[in-house]
Length: 110
Length: 117
Image 1 (cartoon, rainbow over the protein chains, first blue to last red):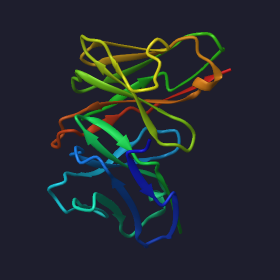
Image 2 (image 1 turned 90 degrees about the horizontal axis):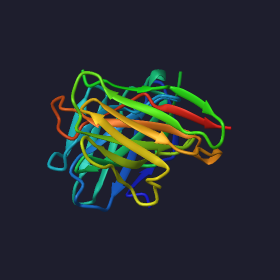
Image 3 (image 1 turned 60 degrees about the vertical axis):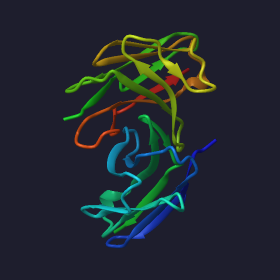
Image 4 (image 1 turned 180 degrees about the horizontal axis):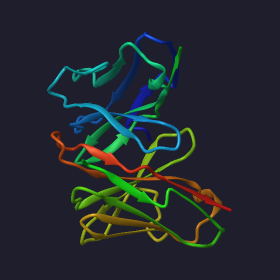
């Protein structure tokens, strides 16, 4: 049973465009929401993370928007680059235990 | 900082044999580590929580007698897949909580690809 629902499953964006990935959760005990980037054959790497008392966090080209009342959060990748082509996972954490979304494969076309 | 390593990165074994995978926190201590399994084109699924000095706790549906976990020190956890079968072929990844500014941050190892013939 997936505790975090993620969409879309995949997306294609042109270089310089914006990629948007959405996630939703049900368990209100979750208190930490990270996003991970994973390249084929590699472990996930932390991209950006947010706590539920913050509605938005921006780090470079990556922004998390968080809607606590709707139990939804999203990742925006601005000015997408070919090097951003990877699989992105949202996750939710309680007591250090992470529940991952299904993943979104992002392809950035040059 | 906050580097987690795994060894080996890739292992091939015959059905029925046991395989040991090591997870090390290189520049920090980790009293807790986590083990995940990832099948091709799927998400990461938490298998178990490894606790230094005590027994591991397993997620529902994970066979604790098949996936033996030992947290021998504050920087090393091992996962042993016993009597491996082809359906155990997967990508095994460990993680450890770090303290790089944000609590709850998990740092992941590079993963170990297990192929059981």
